[in-house]
Length: 173
Image 1 (cartoon, helix red, strand yellow):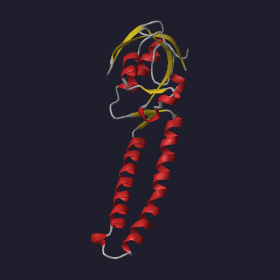
Image 2 (cartoon, helix red, strand yellow):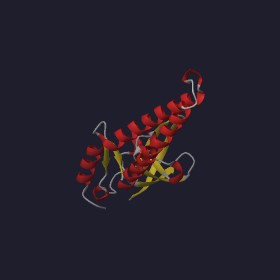
Image 3 (spheres, one colour):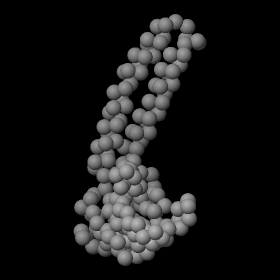
């Protein structure tokens, strides 16, 4: 366990009461930056496609030109959203995470009291969530319900299919 219980609560409050901020790990931020660079690298390709389509004549009936312009608009929208996401990204200081409570970047082993199955999730920001890798966004119903709870507690989680009771078996990093 790193830090004190009070440090964990202060970290928790700082992380989840900031509003527009988007919380990521350093790895997650690096991945977002790589995706942005790849999208920016696509700009010249689309510009060439627009130029080639324009060279084919009458633009009013040129489907290639329309498609290339639409692709350019979609790419610019994606770039703008990614730039905004990166500009509002706050990297989580992993050294300040403790295992007293469920919080961002903790790995939690849960027992579903309804069917007896166990599952483990690492709670992350939305852009890093990947259920196949066991990474669940803290903003999901399960993440929201478990946030701030301790090992051994039973937590009721309201999901679209009803209410599930989970027992927190382990909290680790």
